Structure formats: C-alpha cells, structure tokens
Image (cartoon, rainbow, N blue to C red; front, side, top):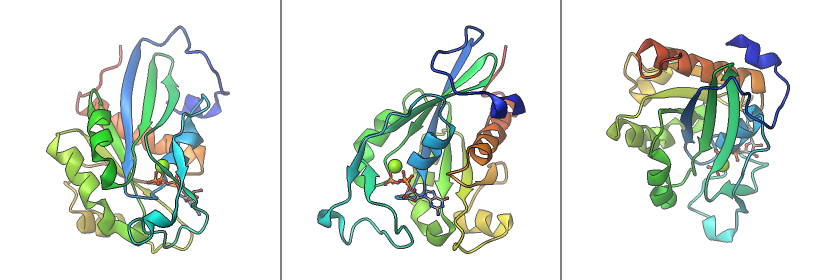
Length: 200
Ligand SMILES: Nc1nc2c(ncn2[C@@H]2O[C@H](COP(=O)(O)OP(=O)(O)OP(=O)(O)O)[C@@H](O)[C@H]2O)c(=O)[nH]1
Ligand SMILES: [Mg+2]
C-alpha cells in the first residue's frame, strides 16, 4: 500500500478501481479533521467552513488553537485511491454536538472511521468514541501530535480513553500527508484483518 505515497494528484478515478469505502474522519472540536482530509485528498476537498464568531464564546474551546478562525458546519469530503483497486471516500465530521443530526446522516454506509484526538483535550473525545461504539462502527484512534501537547505513551492514551485492546491506536501530524496516509493504512489493515473489508 506504500505506493500511494508517491502517486501524483489526479482528478479522475483510475479505471482499475473496483472497490470503494466510505471512511469517516471524526473527533472533537479542533482535533484537525478538516486539516487531515485536506492533507490526504487527491481531489480538491469539499469544505464547509464558517467563521467562528462571538456566539461560540464559552461553547467552542479555542485554547491551544491560536490559528483557528473557522469551524466545519457541514462536512469535509475528500478522496484517496489507496491501491490500484481501492478508493476511499473520506467524510470529515463536524466536531460539535450541536451538529449531531448531521453526524447521524454521515454514519450511514460508513465502513469505519478514524477518530482524531488532541492530547491536550483527551476528555473531549468521549462523545465521539461513544457514538461509534453505539453504532458498532469500527474505528481507529489517531493522535494528532501538536508540538506543545503533552506526550503520553500509547498505553496511557489507551487507558485514558478506555480503548478496547483491539482498537488501532496510531499517531499523525494532520498537516503531513505521509503520516496521515500511514494512519489510514493501519486502519485499513485492521479492517482487512477482521474481514470487514475484502480486496478482490
Ligand atoms: N500546530 C498544529 N496545528 C494544527 C494541526 N492540525 C491542525 N492544526 C491547525 O489547528 C486548527 C484546527 O484544525 P481543523 O482542521 O480546523 O480542526 P477540525 O477538527 O476540523 O475542527 P472543527 O471542524 O471545527 O471541529 C487549524 O488552524 C489547523 O491549521 C497540527 O497537527 N499541528
Ligand atoms: Mg473541521
């Protein structure tokens, strides 16, 4: 699957593609979902960003996010052809619970999801993790590493998030395409291993 890292961007789906999977990119407010979809997408991502206004003061916690001026109010959409025959359609979810109705729709038909977390606000991930667990939708947890964030050992993160032993836990920098693709591949390998995904 590493060959995807050297592929140039392309607009049209290769004719060799026979399988498509809908993969969600979830996570709490400001975890880096929109950034990740933009980093890996081979097409110009669809974004639904709106400016953060005074109305969100006290609701959306901007601590540690000095450059964040917008928030996703709908979804992010991107695409990546991972192997000759497999394409992933990535759906970035909105981060706040006030968009629960939208998130509900995004779950439909999803094969699984990667849930981004920021170690500066691990406790904010509980709702998102629960929403995947309740629907029995497989997920991986991907820690978006920020330079000034506390660094924890994987076991500490597992314990803090109360993750089951078989949940894939990986790390990335949401701005870095290579690390994000690596995280997606780790999750895909888990889906293959557990036979939730089969390649022809
Ligand atoms: N330093 C650093 N900044 C990041 C990283 N990931 C994202 N950012 C920045 O952090 C901010 C938040 O990222 P977004 O991608 O908007 O986060 P989101 O999860 O989509 O946010 P919502 O849709 O509002 O929930 C943006 O200003 C990004 O440029 C990272 O890994 N390191
Ligand atoms: Mg977003």
